Length: 78
Image (cartoon, rainbow, N blue to C red; front, side, top):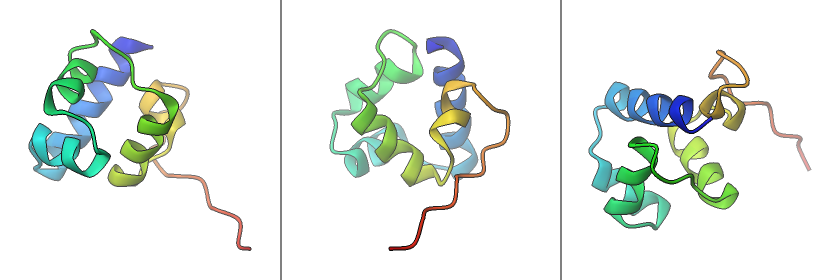
């Protein structure tokens, strides 16, 4: 999973034309932490993974390789 996650994080970031520091600031983590996710040396906690998915507007399932469809799931209205 780490390798797929790393590749997809980098792809999402590059497709959005963003730097690692910009994503890290949004997710309230260090740039080094985000770099480690893209290098597949560490895995993010679920709470961080959720922030990243929301930031890129993709599903967590896409980021971790459970689907190739990046479309996020619809949220139920409350």
